Length: 275
Image (tube, rainbow, N blue to C red; front, side, top):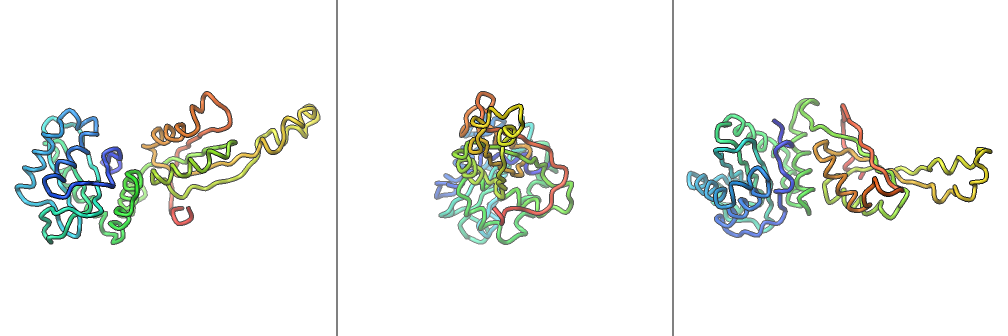
């Protein structure tokens, strides 16, 4: 089981409003029930289970981080969410410092070993000292989600442990969409996209004698395109396509733009700095 499979972006938050431990637990429970597997249990059940666990000893392990966790009878799969508080919350942490980052883990009651492994994976991700600053600097839940998963990848030792990725091509004849799509990628934590310029076949077909009469129609300006190429997490492929189509409209019903994705077997390095 990999963290990217159980970390739910829709449950993450960059703007916790709680100021006390009790209200923080309630707010975390509210975030958790956004997940369809957790929703049937209800906020009150999740809150009470978190409170019961905290009564056994604070999960605030220091340096601004807490790992509240609980197990639920009847749950079939794990959920992990991340929530950030810029102001910090008094959480009875072992070092008495305010907690700024919460990693909530909810798992099936019988899967104790997996629960421990997830706790260890999250703890290991903090081996890089800059990760907390990057998470707290995140402006959206998408950036929070992607920043953490990149840090998890860096803590892995083998290529096979890496997250499955896809290469997305977004071909645009309508340049107005370009900046909106790039802004959307940034909001979702997809950085390092590459943009190339090209021409459609209309720019060349008018040079073929058979199509010479179309020279006025296939003008160069209409056939200039830009292609965005970005490495995206495979599990977010459909989500990101839906997000792009909120900008462009249904691409199966209009012309001027196309999305293509391909599988990636191996990738090394990062385009983040180049973005």
